[in-house]
Length: 88
Image: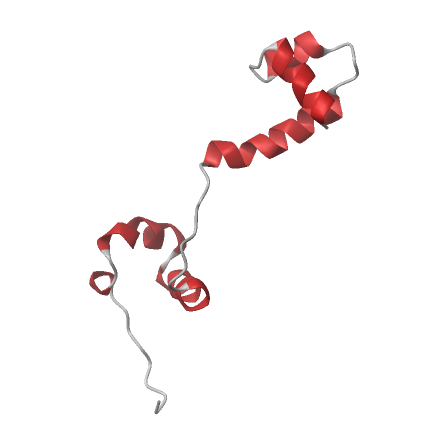
């Protein structure tokens, strides 16, 4: 109230969140805090986030005859490639 600008300092925030603040900045952290404060959120491992894009690429590149090439390119077994394209 009264239009006073709030200043939040790093020491005001729990130490286990400092890494997040260093990545997204204090302003964005405060936006997240305002929108999701009190919620428990899960942040997936980066590798797992990338997997969906990799799987889309494999499905797009697959022609029924290039399982061996795709397995080498994406460092997967031929069986993994075949299972992936079967499930799509």
